[in-house]
Image (cartoon, rainbow, N blue to C red; front, side, top):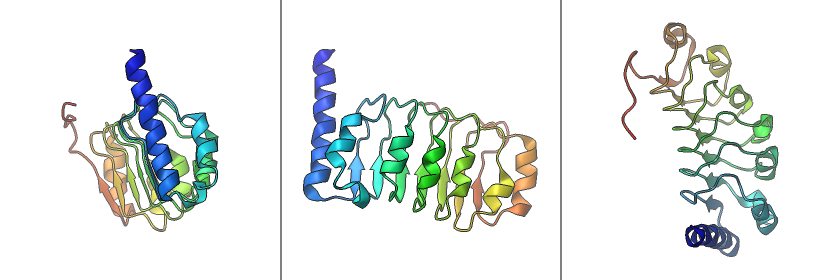
Length: 184
């Protein structure tokens, strides 16, 4: 067990160092068994946070993200958080004014994260395979850059299915009523 933890820590450190040393605009910490975003990473990345445009934290064990994460990486264009245990986002997600795409698929959202509707550059929202029933259709319809909202394999209520199509100018992907999510 300790050996596996040590390997995971070393993997995270290696990936963070690669980002710093190469001056990359990407931080990829996918599949690192993270239960939270390591606080020490803020210090290591402090000189390069403004140049980071894409962060991948997919397929970890995250249950939440802190407000510090959102405000530290305010220049993000893409955020990949699929395959975690997230059920909400901090209100500070509204500081991600340049964010174009967010992937929150395969998490545990029961409520649509409405803070996303305040992001002017957001083009793509992926919430596939969550537990979302209701969607703020009017707020989504008012988003200037939005192209796609993926809500496949969510137990959407019938009202959303009926109201959304005439109001929206973007693609809202929904699974036919009663369809089941594919097995993991």
